[in-house]
Image (cartoon, helix red, strand yellow):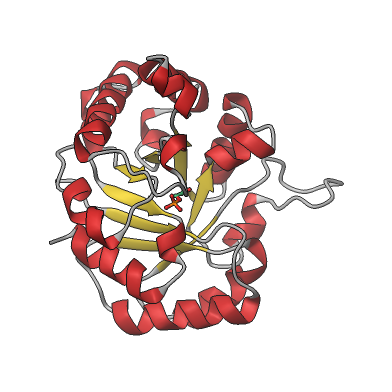
Length: 252
Ligand code: PGA
């Protein structure tokens, strides 16, 4: 039985004070919540303060990206060890917004995954097709390409630390959620590809989140699908009420 994992991707929202306040509100509601893993991913500048705010609660901390070099003259970048030093345990890698606006490719996603693992960070690796790709029947090809490229050269042991997030780009921030059966179909396909790249056991163990307009109203149905093991939540993770409702509905 795969343990569900709900992660909040705060994207480029919240000042330090606002982030502390949101984390504090979540901590009050989910202090010793143990029915699934809960992770929140604020911006880099908020990690340390949010970590302090979450102290002793069961909510885990994650970052939204990392650079693969350990240190050096890379103005504006943040390394895995720097993220780990804040107390964060997870890192989102290869989000479609990074592929779209910051030239992220499968090759750079792969480098970031390896750097994360080297620094004991658990990667949440995003894959998913855009609207044109879906409409031209390329969903499976795109997802397979993202998986094979991003996960290239990883050992079985490394793969066991990775969470995959299937995020159809056309459903992100648009209010258009994939139907539960559309999502389930791709999740089952992802598991099949994982069994080809690795093996059946790894494919069965890997947690695959769905992301794209997850809300309290659709969380239970999505999470009820056989191959959906959690959610990566953007907009609805920015308010205590909606994120807590998603977490609770996910394990109903
Ligand atoms: P959304 O974002 O929930 O606002 O659609 C999801 C994501 O981009 O991770």
